[in-house]
Image (cartoon, rainbow, N blue to C red; front, side, top):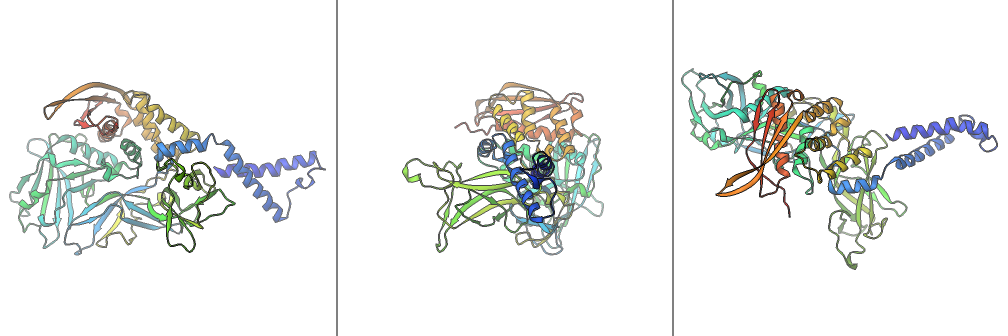
Amino acid sequence: MFNKYYQDELAYLRQLGKEFSEAYPALGPMLADRGADPDVERLLEGVAFLTGRIRQKLDDELPELMLAIAGLLFPHLTRPLPGAAILELELLPNVLRERKIVPQGSEFSSIQVDGTPCRFTSCADCEVVPWQITEARLEPLPDGTQQLRIDFRCAAGIQIAAVAPEHLRLHLTGDPRTALGLLHWIHEHTRDVVLIETNKLGGREQEISIGKRSLSPVGFDDSEALLPYGDLAFPGFRLLEEYYVLPQKFAYVDIANTVRFGELKEELQDFAIAIRFDAPLTNAPQVTRDSVKLHCVPVINLFKTTAEPIRLSQTREQFLVRPAGLQPGHGEVYQILDVQAITRGASDRVNIPSFFEFTRIGGTSASNQVYYSTHLRPAVIGTGVDMTISFGTAENSGVLPQADVVSIDLLGTNQRLASALRPGEIRVPTPSSPAFAKFKNIGPVTTHVPPPLGRDLQWRVTAHAAMNLRSLAEKNALRAMLGVYNLHGLVDRQAARANDLRIQAIHDIQVRPAERLYRGAPVRGLAIEIFLEESGFTGDGDMFLFGAILDRLFATYVSLNSFTTTTVHGVQSKVKFEWPARSGNLTIL
């Protein structure tokens, strides 16, 4: 973006400067021709650079005010959307003999891209057990229905029950139509889940029913968040962003009630889990061993690091914040975590609070407290965003802390470098990655999206503010809200078009009061029915996941003492998806 201003100013100096010299030779004789002196050319380029920055600033429309409002109320709109992927852990042979947990926040690295490795962080705990999937397939049943059968093998010499996870997490992979089609059928049409003692000799296999209630969806809880979110933002906004960034993070299913694994024979090494449906799958996908995977976890290109130290100077008001050790264009600040002032010769560090942290107190005791503020502007190099930091007191800006150096801890991202990674290229171990497994990403890394600035940010903040005056039960209001988070439209036209089709597929919304009995007392809530045009989706599974996101979104807008029930109808096919009553989680006070 800035390159346009620079080129315009340089062309202005060289082309129109010549015309000015010809018209007024006494005033500007040296502007007539392009000089051969490199020092003069450097001077012209420097002037073009500075005036280009001034023009860019003048073209902004109240940027500081809008950024301050957005940073306080909707901080997620002022941050980039980093690249993300699904990572598969593959156990090394004969290494793991017990259940292990790879904790949330573990770091994984990629091969080098333009000389820089990209760093990724896991977004959920991953339970790892010495099992492997040997086969997965759809099987017909005698009553005309089907089952999804998944065959497992436990490592030799280990009892299955001794290493059984608290929740067996399965990831549905493959093309989105297949994965989401299975996800929809599992959550909508399961009638039973059974453990099977595999009989290799072809005899009768023993079965243990663990019930359909052992199944639960994955990816919707705050503990499984892909993106760090502030306390002020609704979790429903986070789900919308994550749905657009990495919909595969919801293509999981958890199987609980694993205590029943203790009923399997101790000497058993092979067993199976069958998810039995109440009807045969429509347009049944081709299910293979690669359609269902163990030990998969979402990862995102975010990592904790420090900024290059800032040496304070009274001659400057703003200081550039850049991740340490990364060349320009290879790193970007996602969020500042901590700012500390360091004085030469002093052992203590002094924390500097943010101006917008609500920690300010009145009175003269706080009048000399120094705060920091951050500012965003389009990057000089590339298409990202540069962050600068300034300091001041509650009354005066430009007041520096009494220190020599400022140290900053932050969350960083590798910008668009990560988006260049292909499947299998996140595979380099780190000190926090598990030593008992190798790993790889099973799909490409999603596109990095810089934060919207200028008029685009103004529109999104204004749309958010308008939501306080309108109900999401209005079709156009809901469409506008969903459009606010379709940020991939800034960089990926194909993804933007697919999301636009889903948003425009909302045909109608009907809301009516509802009542339920809870522990003998009546509770009032809302019954929400959404009518969708099937043409906006790739299949029933795609429409089911879209409805599941809306179901959670509506719950974030309902108070704690109320509830919502969401039903999605297909306009043409009359397909119907229903979700159970969900308690609201909006705290009024």
